[in-house]
Image (cartoon, rainbow, N blue to C red):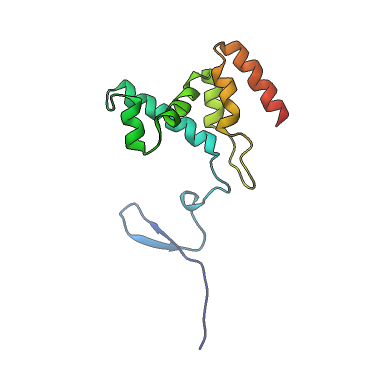
Length: 132
């Protein structure tokens, strides 16, 4: 008995027919690494804010019930919205983590979120990034 092992990639043509290819197309390639947790939490904060602003949920209490977390945790997540917009953007587009722990976690940012002045936040953020 002969066993042949070959990796096959299925794609669809423009007309919807399946094709077999020897190597994966660009859409089938999976980037190495994972999105940092703080990036996902930042995106979640933006989505929670949208839900509250559009009136889809009436309060953070209802949001906590729907997300099956505590109301203080929702507050912690929403506090990320107090960051300067450029810092929020940097958090959203952090590089993928390929091994080990995430370089930044949400708990480390709480002091930064508590600062009211965006100018001071930016200085604190620059110091924080230089220590990484």
